[in-house]
Image 1 (cartoon, rainbow, N blue to C red):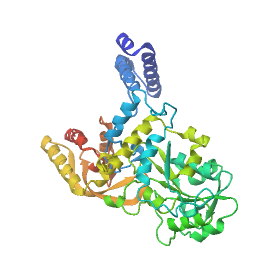
Image 2: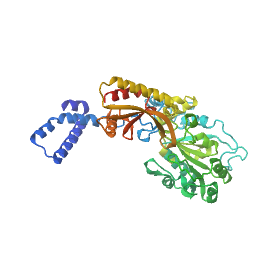
Image 3: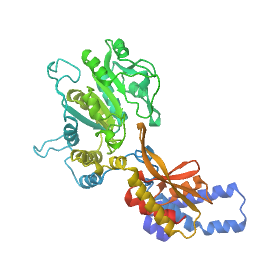
Image 4: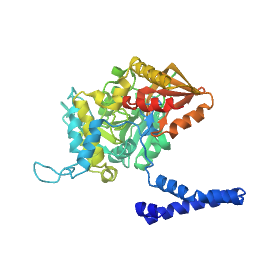
Length: 465
């Protein structure tokens, strides 16, 4: 014990001893111990304390191998960061930085300028200047300024809260009944609306809402028209929903801003990777939406953040809201986001892991699958592990593109001595843990979400079964 105390400190060792003794007392109270059993238990006390100490002082948050094929797996941290993002975080966080300091003037600066300048380049491209956004006395009726500004808060729910509070506090927001969604963690649009101190006026029905429903509901208390993207489910069949252009035209006619909670905003055309029907941020802005809210760690492929992009004068109102300071993000997020956006500006989409995974073809994945299976079989002499190669589908996940699937090849595992759940638990117990999925009594491994440099870990683990 003295060696442990000298290495880890008296307090940590004492805490581990108390934890081990508490477990031992519970075991003794739960079953009968003879003298021999008690001697054995006490004899292993030192080893138990050392194990407890090692576990208590080790990290709980661990890197895992995502073999599920779910690209934006919320439980596994959503989008993995690009290498350049990690480098930029390290370089700007292990020293001081110009987070809120203007190097040109020597004066205090704004932290959001580091990414707003990049968003302006990405979101102001090819935009039509005239005719977008709500008319007002501050805007020219002939040529409305469409300069786009972006601010960053800690997640998309915070972005929605800030936008609603800034634009509609004390008034009403009109939203379709078919868009009153619930996202992960039981957070619901009506509850976010309530916290923003804006009233909600529901229009239409669950499956059918027309632009006339919005127009008929507008009154002297109306402050905002809201569109919520149904990102984690679909309504099919007898349905109707007004096009964004129709809502934008109504908003301009009635001098109201139009806001869209896009949820999982993409900065590229996802049709290029085989995903249809998932709108991007530019699609919404080009359709005439004034304010778009979306996540940083979903289809954008960056750090967790809530992004608010839209007309500069409306965004300025949110920036001056005291809630903005409460919801703002730190230098680590800005650094990771800045590096991610620079990859978009350079058109280096493969540098963003999420985009690279979506672009992988079935044939590319199949070649890696065959190589892994071949290497495992070559390493095995006699094994109870049974491997098959089968067709399958990967999904985007993270509340994005709920109906979109990407064709893939899977390694299907079964074991003569273990159930699928037991085999899956063995994968999770590996270091690093391997997280797969179980379907129809087999453990399925999808390499779409496994980094190529992790393939050797799968080979080593599977060869040992």
